[in-house]
Length: 68
Image (tube, rainbow, N blue to C red; front, side):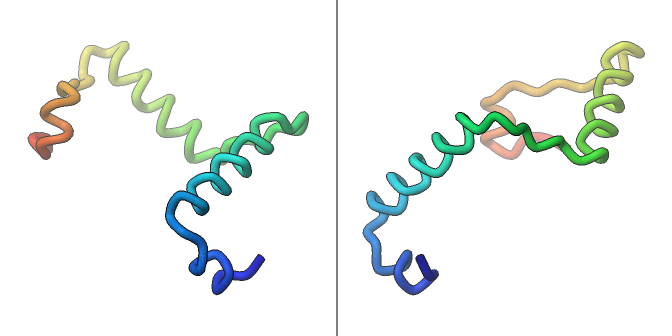
């Protein structure tokens, strides 16, 4: 399927196709390994929490853009 063909689909059709693709990926036996930088970010966040240096905001503040 080409981009041109995809653009001819309705939004509903494209969303349904994305759902089907996502579902097919979820049932794959082979897992895709996360890149090393994902692990680095998670470790940094865990360290900040452990050291008491983590800052948390509410979901409402996040949605409103009230963060650094």
